[in-house]
Image (cartoon, rainbow, N blue to C red; front, side, top):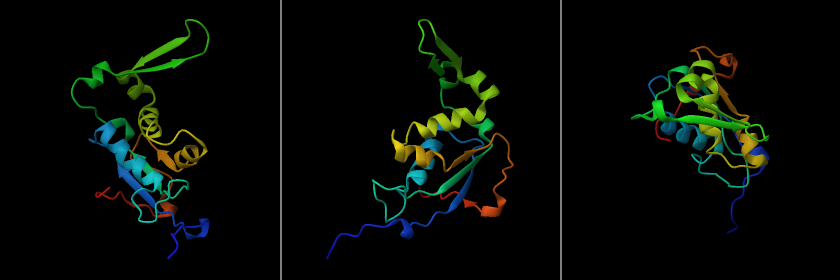
Length: 144
């Protein structure tokens, strides 16, 4: 019996919505990355984008455990000498709450064309509203 390998026409993509209010950042990110990658499906294939679309709402109400909220710092570098920029977690959450969640999730995806295709299926919103009602998103699976 030959090994089953799904083709592009065999992929079905669902839409899921998750409320990030009160959720821990890392735990939420691992669950979302698993669904974006498609590892929750029995037909998972590492070299294909098998994942589903995920909508994250209330990103501004995400939490960190312990003292990470005071210690966590986001760094970026311009490429020039002395061009490092550091932003503490509290300031980043205040100014760009969607970036906090997106960076955590994208850091758990592959660093190649496949990972970029997976990250395009992620939609993050700071508030409780999202414009994807037409896709009829389902509640996020708890078993993932």
